[in-house]
Image 1 (tube, helix red, strand yellow):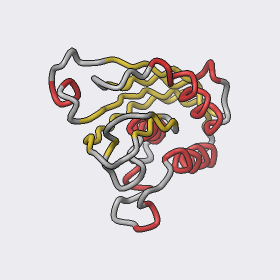
Image 2 (cartoon, rainbow, N blue to C red):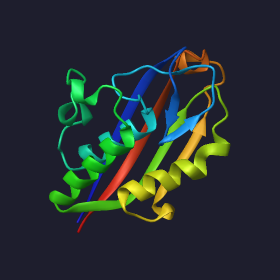
Image 3 (cartoon, one colour):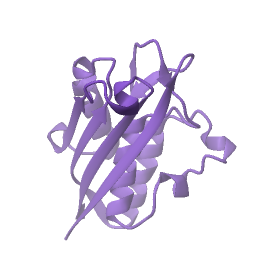
Image 4 (cartoon, rainbow, N blue to C red):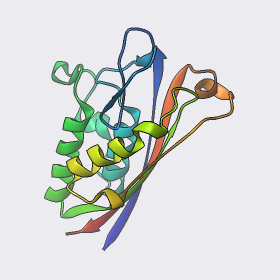
Length: 158
């Protein structure tokens, strides 16, 4: 049996924060603002996995009002989501994700992002797709005000 879920996340770019995507610390002049490390890619993927199983979203599991999640490493949160999915009898079939950012160029970091996500999800790198695109200077991402990500997760019964 298969289940599919979609996830979306967006965070504002600000000075004085790290830019972390897919567990990769990317050198940049601004970083993402959020309660945790604000890894929009990881957040979209987690929401897709949870959505596929009708288990809500990451805000349900990791509320941004809880002090224990302030500055949290999103890859550690993803490991907990994977555990919850397995507890419910499902594992990753595949994940397809897209990061929308005008800058910086993400192509040099995509392989490492895929490797990080696959490791946390206990699956092969070939099951994880990460792509990056710009919005041709349109909208909040095009104006470099924020970064967003979409993800689709196919979950399969264990």
